Length: 302
Image (cartoon, rainbow, N blue to C red; front, side, top):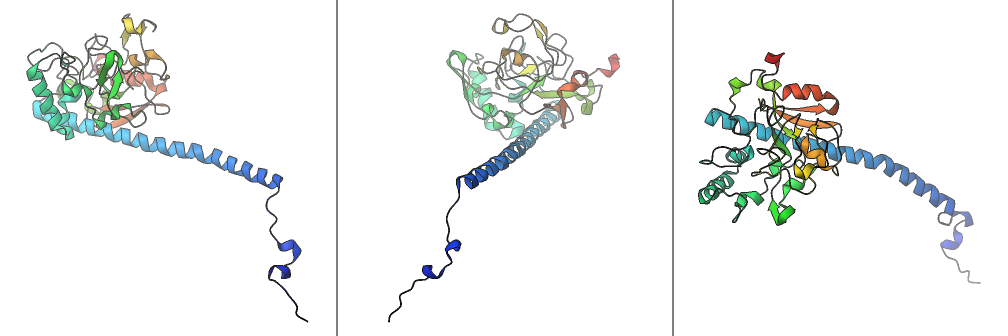
């Protein structure tokens, strides 16, 4: 008699795969959810840490460029050229650093455009108005990495880093303000104790925070330079903001008044560049320390 058999018939009945039950599946899904809940915040923290390091490196490069400019010309550049029509009117301090940031071609282009005409924004806008420079873009924001479409149908390059006027546009007791040209010997508090560049994202409508040049609220204020106790004197586009001084504090991107004070997308505070080229982080709770550091001769006034 011939006996038929198969491999599967020799397996014990209880050893065959029967799949997951509904309860087991729900348990697995719950475990995966818990793991993702733990993993995603850790990944986000790691990403922000990397962005913060990149932002710090940008400021260091800008610091080296500012020091090199000082070595070449005997002073730091003007925060904005305002009363010198024979030079590059309305141009920002950032443009003067292009040769030291491997952007000599952009600087030559700016000089050529100014030689053609002083009207930066028209009728034929300077090409530099819409040329983004990644060094001036903090990765935590990222909008300054590429040209943006602003109000009035303008394509503009933005910056996350503004020159520090000092207290405000009237006091001009910092390092980078309108027609400044401050020398190291003018910084009596010491270059390692005085900040000259700080973080502040461009406005949500791309109208404040232009890289190449700007009119700002007054003499480039809120565009390319800003004070640490800046005043709102009733500027039309900020009519909904409180009058008086604005302070270093955390805010939301949707708040149009955020252009009046320093802040960043980094958790807890912002990074600032010292006049010696080093970078330090100020927490929002250290407002008074920042205000002292923004004035180049604060200690002598105490």
